Length: 419
Ligand code: EPZ
Image 1: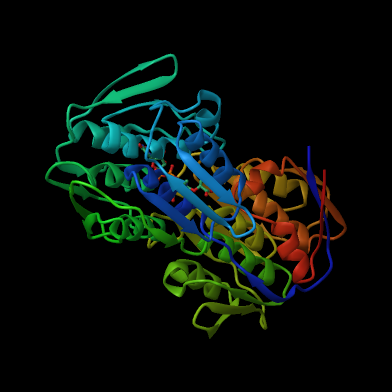
Image 2: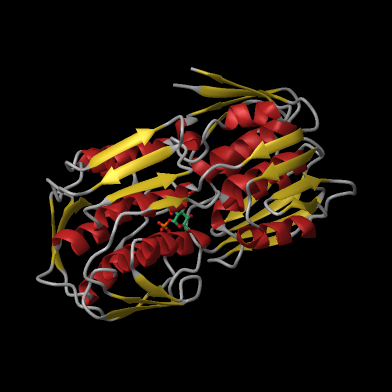
């Protein structure tokens, strides 16, 4: 199994570019099944989650080509030979559940494995199903699959008990070809939801309100193929910003959108990390004063993103003073804390809150990535820790960060991937 070996090498300096956003690419790839015509998606790094979803789509008899060099994926769902996704693959990757909305819209039927939980939580899909039932679907579950179908999809008002990103995306996808109007109340407002809506509107969908808590979709007869460039990854951007801050470096993070980063920039400035817009899509991140501890609460957008919680914990663990993190989105998203404690971090966990006493320095040792963002947090801590750190199970990290070791090497980090 591969691992990252990281040695402290002081301040990171230079420019690093952010790639296309995993959490926008996955729903957009699912949405390409809505049309018989060709879709071309640009800015798609060959992340393992992306490769997995692409292979699942190909196994349904759909034409799909990945150009890894150009980071572009072409899909033409003229023929959909199977309405069932592979059990093993789908159970391993939640985002495969997003295919359900597109299959219901195109074929009125889908057979999709119930996505397993994952290290950060049970990850139910009750809100997805609540939306599909409101559109006229019914389902039964057997042998680990959900078999869902409808005579026709009829628009309706759907209230989401929690502004679930995936449920908002899945219902929006299905509603584009439903009869009549669908209104999603208490919808997720994440930038990735807006990016999916932009893609769907380029295909000819009739959507308003994306980015607010009420999204209205008026069904159309047909959608066309289109070409689309995915938004940059705001979580990758935030991760590199913390890499600069935790090493007291001076880094320009390129290919970012300020509107996506507002909660991250706000929290960084509360700690006294300096962020300066140097170009329309580039921010310089550096430190020139003592950093301050903060209280941080993860919330749905425009609140502080839960995916930045682990990277931020790494920074707070080396800022003198007491910081508090409250994780309100997932029930088990502090797994990285135990690994940080092996490096000398002083963190106490009580259900959804973590109290962090900043220490002078962390020390390198052998640690394990437990999930995607927790693994990224371990890389950040290792960059600042005395001595050598070995991170195993890095497949978690490579689900969401493409060539992270090469990007960090470019700004001066000592990180190698050992296979
Ligand atoms: C998306 O997951 C992202 N993944 C996650 O990123 C991200 O952390 C999350 O949104 C929150 O922003 C992708 O987009 C592929 P949710 P998703 O539905 O859609 C509960 C990463 O690291 N819930 O908004 O699964 C759920 O249990 C990943 O890139 C229900 O109760 O998140 C959780 O507590 C991790 N019923 C909360 O809502 C449902 O039907 C948020 O989940 C659905 C969700």
